[in-house]
Image (cartoon, rainbow, N blue to C red; front, side):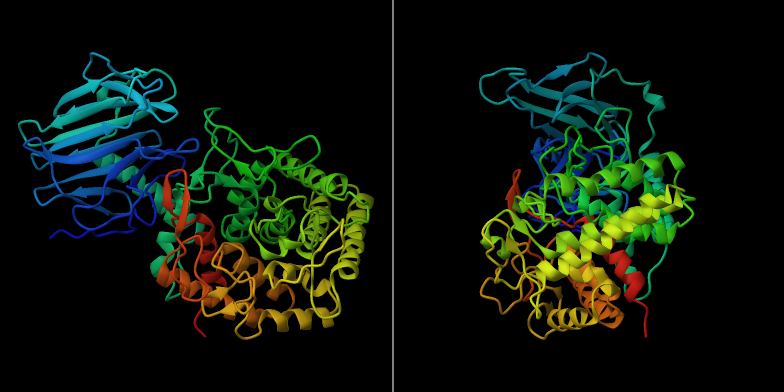
Length: 591
């Protein structure tokens, strides 16, 4: 019986390439046993569904049972009779090859409404490919097709393409993505299958060397898997075919095929020490999507961005890390640095302009999606909600923009004012949100105070030594108290003994932002030992259970279940992958 051998299983992490919107997915049920998996060549633009072309091995007209394996640069569809190998050779080009005398069947999932399947009369076929067009190119082998009701509004469009082996038993076929009607280049100009694999591997190897060439043992084994996850989720500027003007990093495949603004800030923190140029580019990209009031968008899709989606102003914290890595701005042009400076100043001003309704100098969130903790229990006091962590990020951002301003030679009076504003804001935070023993949030209309044990309420600890020592000591003691927040697997987002604890994103699960923010907060407060203890627990969870987006606080197992866009599971995420690399470098050295 065949068993899959995987670099990373596609049931955990679909296969893509830097800058590409082509990917390989398994069936959403996630079955991996022999005879169970269904392999799809996918287009991941838009909002899904993300499985458009099913690939099967056929003999004597019948599909064979298969397994799906992977290497760093290939996906392998295997039967007991032979196999086909798949590679994303270019950002818009997949090449598939088999040498075992078997037939490859490709079945596009073309919608009935506007679906197009057309014979171009030169041996190639064009058909709808999610929001774009695919061209099927047989390099070797004989193509036989069955297409019915192409473009019809009655019922489903059905098509099969069978590519039969040539006299040497070889099938070699390409699928190329187009935004316009397909006019293919001369066949000899396409990279061979072997060149596709070489190109993929060389680009990935170079990325690994640039971003994280090694990690201490025992974290090294997962290093390339974390880098590969990030690599396949990178989007690039592409001459107007998408909205992206700069390199950025998507969250994860399937359910969240989009860039998130506050996640970009955390990628910058995690990757800045090794690759400040990449991180300046990511930060510059965030300010491509800033409205007239100064708000930056949090959700960026390939073809649109949400003007209403917003997250906390953690970009200032990221800017501090970038300036630590590149204080003389050697890795960024002055033009881009000025754009970031002006953008981050307007971003800070936005909160006083649009999120301080009662003009008490403290920002308020007007909805859960603005907080970053979407389903947190402390929202039970309602909105508008003033909280210590959001205001702490803003105080740090004011300080960071002063620092960038000085690096750029901006007016000293302006920079000094930003610093003074930051200090005044910190005092307002202490006065408004500290009750002498703990932090709380409150509804700014009713005055109702939160009574939950949500970890984000202690996020003001990110201010570190800017806080009085008594507040630091009490907050750290609460955060590190046994059987509350610090589990064997990392920080739970709600204390595990809280009546509000639940197995959901910010109601008690182990999630990436909580791990990074509170390890950094502990360091800022002078407790590197505590940060290392928590960081090592999360590292071990990621190493043993996988680089998933969410883990169970009681078992450490991945919390994969989420139904959205025809997905049933959450996959590995770039967020957790960047944090893995960061924490392994920072906390992972043997004693």
